[in-house]
Image (cartoon, rainbow over all chains, first blue to last red; front, side, top):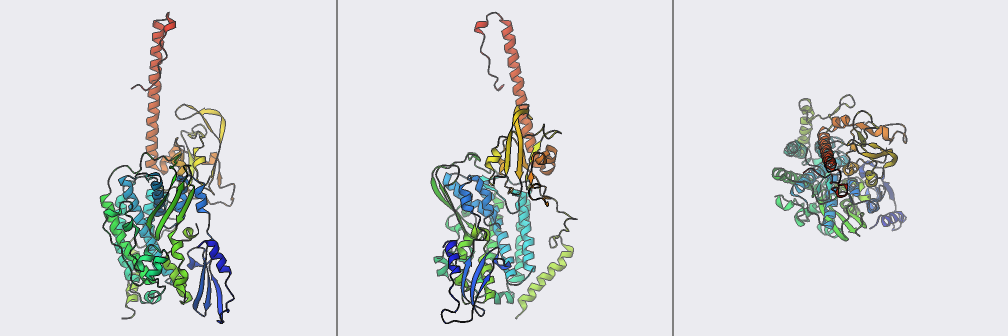
Length: 386
Length: 213
């Protein structure tokens, strides 16, 4: 559904008491609301505390990403992809690089693949850490869990900064590899961070997992059935929390993921608590992958020497590259007409597609649950609106 | 038991609270601006122009080729070529930028200008204290404000800068060797021409001043 249709639908809300239900109250949550993870509005119709109808309204952060990219060179839109899901720039880079490599038929050297896996999994760690912090903040656990999460995230962002030069706007991947090699001592530092991560997870779990308030607020809230998850195209941790065994790392075997032993955690209830737990379990698996990757990383070139930085013109054709981003299936669809800029550039943002079922999850719940459910979807408005 | 989970969580916060007095990784607060974290070497924010030697106008490496201007994704670089030429670091006569402006309110610090520059003339700075109350003037950096010495570059990015310097020194040495070889060849040709001075009609064609190897 396009943003325009959604916006139009939201404006055409019928008078609140049309079906004999009086005392309905229409309120707008957001766009300037701390729980909306950016600028996002929900037009909610309430019967007392219960949600009768919910229309998401977005587009406040729309900045024409796709059209800008069609007027940029292929390399020129790489830094813009950082700004899609600004929590995890490296996976955005990766998905885009993968699409262009598919389009132009570029091979990636071994070491670069390892670098991509390492940075990608570190991104997943910091994204999930943050998400849990935000979710707790939405639930009213002000401060403490979020601060612990951010403390841990900053350690990973320091690694990113040492490698790519920026904490969040990394612009690190290149077509056919990565931009720079690991600086001296980076791998040891990263090994230390990854080795310390399970301790953080243990602490975080004992802080939160068995907390009765958290369980009351999240269990059986926002239940997403397996059928709806599949038919709505939900991907990532959200789908897996509903028991859909779908992880693109396992399905596509892209990059070198078939070399690592890791498991895909699945939920059984599909409620907010499952989504929260899935992220904790996924982080443990990411730590696993990271340890294997950092053990096996070979020496060698980091970028395909045949790929040009300037004057890059892939031959006409189309390609869709997708990866398992921290939020779900992140895909880039590119059509080339042989010119230096793509003819069509389309992003498949996991946040947007996971957000489309917000109403189904919220109907019949209390207002306070909306915030928790929205938090558990894990959206970043930079990616939703593009 | 109801409340057990909460108590467990409280034990965790207590561990963090008391731990913050003894352990550095539990208390990461820095009292900025009095205390500052050491800067990470690879950090980048905005571009600057490198010059060699003492005079920023003489030593300017940029030759106004305008590649960065074309490749810059948000198009924040503006260059005007000079009418005259000046010798560059390798002694070759080159044009130079008459105007070189970077609007850092537009710049997104992506480093693509650095990657495409064939002359190692533009590099990323680490100076982040750029706040100003003049929105337009202060954030539009001109050639003079952008110019920073090679020593400064070496100070902020030592590893990268020393690699660049080594590469440039090698290039310069190569050029000098080439010039020397060319001079020798020329001298030899002249000597030869002087030796068989008279039959000027079948003088050997001028030898190409190629690589000595």
